[in-house]
Image 1 (spheres, helix red, strand yellow):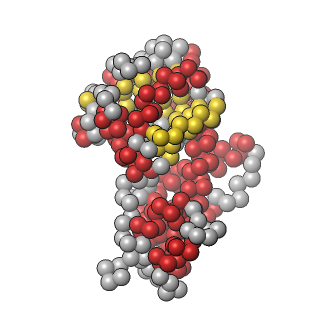
Image 2: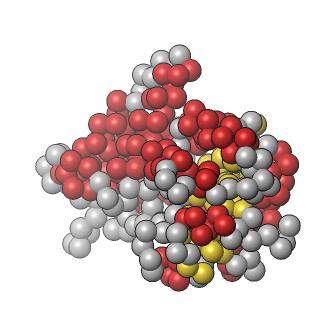
Image 3: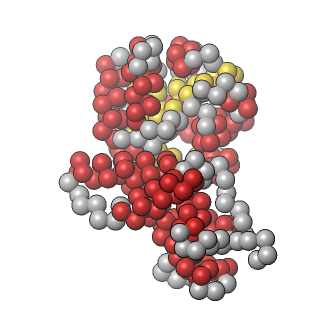
Length: 299
């Protein structure tokens, strides 16, 4: 499979970094993005269109904002489905609706092609280092063919099952990420207003039952003024929570805890933080709590 031609559609914060890792691993990539300079920036050969990527690639990776965009790229006029041929693999690295994923997989199967969902976790830092976690769903033979590519971007690849299983796992994980980030942001603003030393507060949390990804990996940087820019935005985090709620509705599971992150990241967007990293939710909460900032120049 080392001779497979690799294409990548969607070279944003995550797609671009994954492309860079694949190229660095010795696999040339043909890339397409609305930003015409993106391909060269991440080391890919620029394609004139998404169709050009499909026509010249054996494996096509997608990293797109949501299912609406994915469906337009796949099914729209001049989309992937109209140009795909038997044996090709499309691996969707986006965060997307599992129901949409299963429907698209059926459409690709009718053409003799494969559509694999591969949700990613680890954020921009892990994408940069090639240490992502992948949650994968789809045909076993297609997943096996993707292994050489996946090995360049991830240190853990977990096959969840049939089509849609990877994206389902990704939505469940992203919801917990949203809850922990929003809740920790609230706690840290409260700690600041209470006059606590925030480094010591994090030491307590990380040695106690409040420990989570945000206390371990985000806020030790944020309290020193580093927001880890370049990752998932508040608008995209809100989108993920909406997708989670849709999933639970389809499953008939009560969603009792979505209101917190929905309100938090919705607030961040309303206050102007929607297009920056979702870690800035702590500033949005600080804004309505008396103008609190965890870090200031005089700290």
